[in-house]
Length: 170
Image 1 (cartoon, one colour):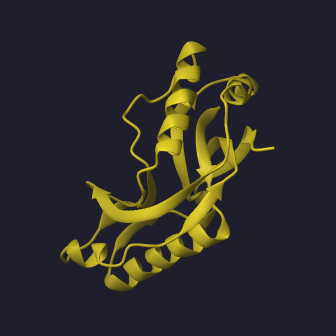
Image 2: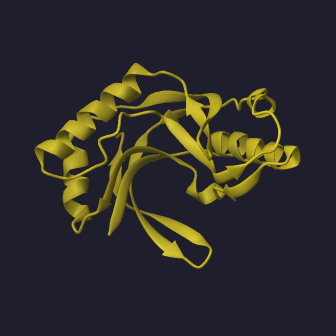
Image 3: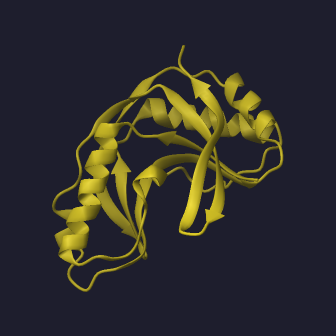
Protein backbone atom coordinates (compact mmCIF):
# COMPACT_ATOMS: atom_id res chain seq x y z
CA UNK A 1 0.00 0.00 0.00
CA UNK A 2 1.42 3.42 -1.01
CA UNK A 3 0.85 5.78 1.93
CA UNK A 4 1.36 9.38 3.00
CA UNK A 5 0.28 11.60 5.90
CA UNK A 6 -1.45 14.83 4.93
CA UNK A 7 -3.70 17.70 5.83
CA UNK A 8 -6.89 17.75 3.77
CA UNK A 9 -8.33 21.19 3.03
CA UNK A 10 -11.65 22.83 3.80
CA UNK A 11 -13.85 24.40 1.13
CA UNK A 12 -12.36 27.92 1.44
CA UNK A 13 -8.82 26.70 0.73
CA UNK A 14 -9.99 24.39 -2.06
CA UNK A 15 -11.85 27.26 -3.75
CA UNK A 16 -8.81 29.54 -3.55
CA UNK A 17 -6.55 26.85 -5.03
CA UNK A 18 -8.90 25.87 -7.85
CA UNK A 19 -9.43 29.54 -8.73
CA UNK A 20 -5.66 29.92 -9.01
CA UNK A 21 -5.49 26.84 -11.25
CA UNK A 22 -8.25 28.32 -13.46
CA UNK A 23 -6.43 31.65 -13.65
CA UNK A 24 -3.25 29.86 -14.69
CA UNK A 25 -5.07 27.96 -17.43
CA UNK A 26 -6.36 31.29 -18.81
CA UNK A 27 -2.77 32.62 -18.80
CA UNK A 28 -1.67 29.59 -20.84
CA UNK A 29 -0.23 27.16 -18.31
CA UNK A 30 -0.34 23.60 -19.60
CA UNK A 31 0.41 20.41 -17.69
CA UNK A 32 -1.17 17.91 -15.33
CA UNK A 33 -3.36 19.96 -13.00
CA UNK A 34 -4.02 18.34 -9.63
CA UNK A 35 -7.74 17.52 -9.37
CA UNK A 36 -9.55 19.29 -6.53
CA UNK A 37 -10.15 16.02 -4.67
CA UNK A 38 -6.37 15.39 -4.60
CA UNK A 39 -5.25 18.78 -3.26
CA UNK A 40 -3.54 18.30 0.11
CA UNK A 41 -0.50 19.25 2.19
CA UNK A 42 1.89 16.30 2.61
CA UNK A 43 3.46 16.07 6.07
CA UNK A 44 5.28 12.77 5.52
CA UNK A 45 5.49 10.56 2.43
CA UNK A 46 5.83 6.95 3.50
CA UNK A 47 5.55 5.06 0.22
CA UNK A 48 4.97 1.31 0.12
CA UNK A 49 4.08 0.01 3.58
CA UNK A 50 1.86 -2.92 4.47
CA UNK A 51 0.44 -1.93 7.85
CA UNK A 52 -1.63 1.28 7.82
CA UNK A 53 -3.15 0.40 11.22
CA UNK A 54 0.30 0.57 12.83
CA UNK A 55 0.94 3.96 11.24
CA UNK A 56 -2.43 5.19 12.61
CA UNK A 57 -1.41 3.96 16.07
CA UNK A 58 1.87 5.86 15.82
CA UNK A 59 0.04 8.99 14.60
CA UNK A 60 -2.30 8.75 17.58
CA UNK A 61 0.68 8.60 19.95
CA UNK A 62 1.84 12.06 18.81
CA UNK A 63 0.19 14.92 20.74
CA UNK A 64 -2.05 16.85 18.35
CA UNK A 65 -4.00 20.04 18.95
CA UNK A 66 -5.65 22.25 16.36
CA UNK A 67 -3.77 25.12 14.71
CA UNK A 68 -4.41 27.37 11.77
CA UNK A 69 -2.62 27.52 8.44
CA UNK A 70 -2.60 30.25 5.80
CA UNK A 71 -1.91 30.09 2.10
CA UNK A 72 1.18 32.15 1.34
CA UNK A 73 2.79 32.60 -2.03
CA UNK A 74 3.32 30.51 -5.12
CA UNK A 75 6.39 29.13 -6.78
CA UNK A 76 7.98 26.41 -8.86
CA UNK A 77 10.23 23.39 -8.43
CA UNK A 78 11.47 22.79 -11.99
CA UNK A 79 8.24 21.73 -13.79
CA UNK A 80 6.03 21.67 -10.68
CA UNK A 81 3.94 24.75 -9.85
CA UNK A 82 2.76 25.05 -6.25
CA UNK A 83 1.08 27.21 -3.62
CA UNK A 84 2.80 27.72 -0.28
CA UNK A 85 1.80 27.71 3.36
CA UNK A 86 2.94 30.58 5.61
CA UNK A 87 5.68 29.84 8.14
CA UNK A 88 3.99 28.28 11.13
CA UNK A 89 5.72 27.04 14.28
CA UNK A 90 2.78 24.86 15.34
CA UNK A 91 2.76 23.07 11.96
CA UNK A 92 6.55 22.68 11.91
CA UNK A 93 6.65 21.37 15.49
CA UNK A 94 3.86 18.87 14.81
CA UNK A 95 5.62 17.59 11.68
CA UNK A 96 8.90 17.25 13.60
CA UNK A 97 7.18 15.23 16.38
CA UNK A 98 5.29 13.11 13.83
CA UNK A 99 8.41 12.28 11.81
CA UNK A 100 10.37 11.49 14.98
CA UNK A 101 7.62 9.03 16.01
CA UNK A 102 7.70 7.40 12.56
CA UNK A 103 11.50 7.01 12.78
CA UNK A 104 11.37 5.64 16.34
CA UNK A 105 8.89 3.00 15.13
CA UNK A 106 10.97 2.07 12.06
CA UNK A 107 8.36 3.39 9.63
CA UNK A 108 10.26 4.58 6.57
CA UNK A 109 9.44 8.00 5.12
CA UNK A 110 10.96 10.46 2.70
CA UNK A 111 13.40 12.46 4.84
CA UNK A 112 13.54 15.53 2.63
CA UNK A 113 13.32 18.75 4.59
CA UNK A 114 9.68 19.69 5.22
CA UNK A 115 8.77 22.46 2.80
CA UNK A 116 5.03 23.10 3.12
CA UNK A 117 3.54 23.41 -0.36
CA UNK A 118 0.55 22.22 -2.34
CA UNK A 119 1.31 20.80 -5.78
CA UNK A 120 -1.05 22.43 -8.29
CA UNK A 121 0.48 21.45 -11.65
CA UNK A 122 2.95 18.70 -12.59
CA UNK A 123 4.89 18.71 -15.87
CA UNK A 124 3.94 22.37 -16.14
CA UNK A 125 4.73 24.32 -19.27
CA UNK A 126 4.45 28.08 -19.56
CA UNK A 127 5.94 30.03 -22.46
CA UNK A 128 5.83 33.47 -20.85
CA UNK A 129 7.52 35.08 -17.87
CA UNK A 130 6.96 33.14 -14.67
CA UNK A 131 6.54 36.52 -12.96
CA UNK A 132 3.05 36.73 -14.51
CA UNK A 133 1.99 33.66 -12.53
CA UNK A 134 3.39 34.95 -9.26
CA UNK A 135 1.36 38.19 -9.25
CA UNK A 136 -1.86 36.92 -7.66
CA UNK A 137 -1.16 34.41 -4.90
CA UNK A 138 -4.20 32.71 -3.36
CA UNK A 139 -5.58 33.76 0.01
CA UNK A 140 -7.11 31.41 2.51
CA UNK A 141 -6.93 30.29 6.10
CA UNK A 142 -8.22 27.22 7.87
CA UNK A 143 -8.16 25.60 11.27
CA UNK A 144 -6.46 22.20 11.08
CA UNK A 145 -8.50 19.83 13.24
CA UNK A 146 -7.37 16.53 11.72
CA UNK A 147 -4.45 14.88 9.96
CA UNK A 148 -5.11 12.03 7.55
CA UNK A 149 -3.30 8.85 6.64
CA UNK A 150 -3.91 8.49 2.90
CA UNK A 151 -3.41 5.69 0.41
CA UNK A 152 -2.53 6.39 -3.18
CA UNK A 153 -3.54 4.09 -6.04
CA UNK A 154 -3.28 4.59 -9.77
CA UNK A 155 -6.65 4.85 -11.50
CA UNK A 156 -7.64 5.20 -15.15
CA UNK A 157 -7.51 9.01 -14.95
CA UNK A 158 -4.64 9.45 -12.51
CA UNK A 159 -4.01 8.96 -8.84
CA UNK A 160 -6.84 8.20 -6.41
CA UNK A 161 -6.28 9.23 -2.79
CA UNK A 162 -8.29 7.52 -0.06
CA UNK A 163 -8.28 8.27 3.65
CA UNK A 164 -7.37 5.10 5.57
CA UNK A 165 -6.76 6.54 9.04
CA UNK A 166 -5.65 9.59 10.92
CA UNK A 167 -6.06 11.72 14.01
CA UNK A 168 -8.59 14.37 15.05
CA UNK A 169 -8.88 16.96 17.77
CA UNK A 170 -11.48 15.91 20.31
